[in-house]
Image (cartoon, rainbow, N blue to C red; front, side, top):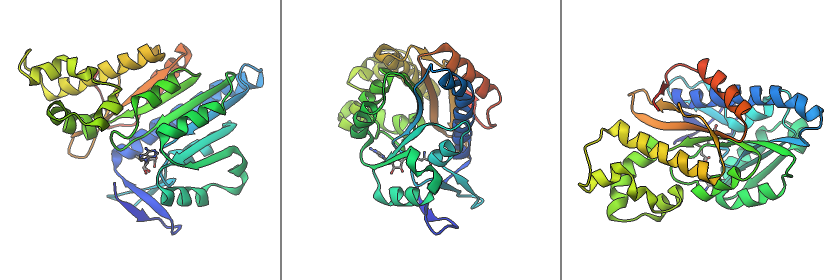
Length: 283
Ligand SMILES: C[S@@+](CC[C@H](N)C(=O)[O-])C[C@H]1O[C@@H](n2cnc3c(N)ncnc32)[C@H](O)[C@@H]1O
């Protein structure tokens, strides 16, 4: 993804309609999450309500077509009311961190922990800082295979709701076939092991079972990945996963939702019903 200077003179990411769509889901869910959980925090059910975004980007996005600027995920979460008690934000790119730091309003600085580093390492440190009476919302928004399955599995062990942009079109579709021939450690870490080789779609590629279409191939990966995270501890999941496509209708990614609480799933389903246009529900 290209980077540009925004009107404030700082670095921004370029995005498309699908970028705005995914961020609209985040904005709606994080607002509904805080509206539902804020009163429970006041009653003492939760000690703290936190937001975790370890692939946060520079804080601002620019529409590649219109040049319109819009807030990225960390600034969206900062603006949610009632407020998150704390936000853990990170990126591995120091330029993104500098831009994001400059965009965090002074009055919010004391409720933000900003880190530069690899999300797969930082996740352990962040989770150490969160008590068992804390409820979290994690937004995990990669460009490809940079997030290891083990990282998501760590979230599954805690009271955290997870929104994960599963890189189906932008990652799996382009890489799974060549990974059969030459195992890529990137793919294996993203998947969390070699078990993807047992999927019917993969066996089909080696001539063992029936023909499958491209959509079915990606769906099969999505369903299997969800099952793995269910085994890791995320027992509440969205089964009708939104799919995002680009302007040419090519699949980009699936937005997976995980929780430990059926009330969270109910909120998520409500968000999806009024979700932004352009996405299809596939599974
Ligand atoms: C798709 S962008 C996130 C965009 C952001 N959510 C937004 O709304 O603007 C992914 C970000 O992850 C960062 N990144 C890539 N690999 C990473 C890693 N292993 N750990 C932390 N950040 C990483 C990239 O520098 C990039 O800024």
